[in-house]
Image 1 (cartoon, each protein chain N blue to C red):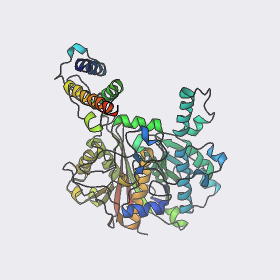
Image 2 (tube, helix red, strand yellow):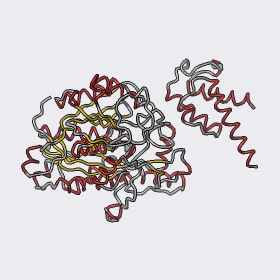
Image 3 (spheres, rainbow over the protein chains, first blue to last red):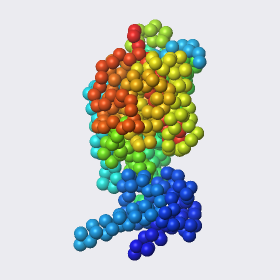
Image 4 (cartoon, rainbow over the protein chains, first blue to last red):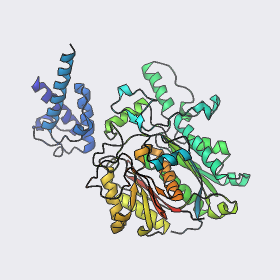
Amino acid sequence: MQEAIEERVKRAIAEASHTAVERLAPETTFEELGMTSLDALALVAELEEEFGVEVPNEDALSLRDVRQAVECVRALTTTAEASEAGQV
Amino acid sequence: MNTSRRVVITGLGAVTALGADVAQFRDALRAGRCGIRPFETVDRTRLRFTNGAEVEGFTPGEHFTEKELDLLDRFAQFGLVAAREAVRDSRVEWTPALRESTAVVTGCSLGGKTYEEQAYAGLFGEEKRRPHPLTVPRGMSNAAASHISMEFGVRGPVYNVSTACASSSHAIGQAFWLVRSGAAELALAGGCESPFVHGHLRMWEGLRVVSPDTCRPFSKDRRGMILGEAGAMLVLEPLDAALGRGARVHAEVVGFGMSADAHHVTQPSAEGAARAIAAALRDADVSPERVGYVNAHGTGTTANDPVETEALRLVFREHAARLAVSSTKSMHGHALGAAGAVEAVATALALREGFLPPTANFTEPDPACDLDYVPNEARRAEVEYAISNSFAFGGLNAVLVLRRWNG
């Protein structure tokens, strides 16, 4: 499951930065990929759509590299699952 | 630059989140009252931000017949209502010759979104086969300019300027130049906007510049802008004509400056903003030390406020420390294409009545914003010159210089 999240986030980053997925390591920064702040906004919107989560503004604007994006989505999907489980 | 004719403001009109007319607007500015609240005209449950600066209690039927409303989207209604107030206030005496040499210049960026959204929803969602046949003329950005010209029989230069958040400052500036140069004998200038439709608000969500709570310009804990809607109009005419007919003068327009950042589509540039301010002061032939008040663009976003502060420091240097700077968007919200007009009215009122409107909701100084922002409480002050800043997405800047009228 964790593997899947990482791969899906990487795919979204690869698409947003017009880069091959193979080039992406956890420590690869958006800056190295030539992504601007506007590209990052588009990426976050794509991640929200892909994972059905809502990234708060402050988090969205602070993401700088692949690892942070993966961690951000992981934290939000865990919260979402937990709250769904809680409702059952 | 030459100043062949002096130009004065003889009429003001405003319908904003702070009230239905200029008197209510002025009282709210003076009291530091904030018009930001949960918006009512759009379903809040499907949006991430829920506060806006809507015009409260606006009943179209009190201003227009049903037949007129068939052609008027919400933004155009605001433009017309504000124009009527400004014209009434100016007591202009229309003659056929004056109507032919009068200009209307409006600032509107979005155009009408209400009917357009209904049309799209019908086409894509409800499979209605045809949108309303008047959707195009209802939504065009120049609708207010055209309806104002028809209402008053104005037949001179009439057009709309669309430069995002600087639209109506560009509009007023151009109208000022038309009157100053003699290309028009009178001008109705201002702007109108209404962004409160679901689809458009969703688009703002994605930009992540709208605050989830309120608008705190220049305050350390600011979280973004708050969208507003408004109509605001000014009547501009040559000083001689105004004095000749015994008109009441609210303030004098003395300068207008423009610039482009040529830098980034959403990130502002201090250098670009500073060039617009410097150009406006040059146009006015006023030295920076004589300016006492700045009605700031002051959106309350992370990006704007420190950059605007830096721009003011670039132009005013040591005098920046003595300037009073406030963002009235903290009270009436960011009315986008109408913002410059709303703020020009606020600036004219501040000069006329001898007070500085505050920056409301201010909690904590930010080291990156280190000027006097008139926090939370209006201040009494007799200022001779004031400027009003507007800096738009796309890096387009417009600045007006106003002077107190001493009679």
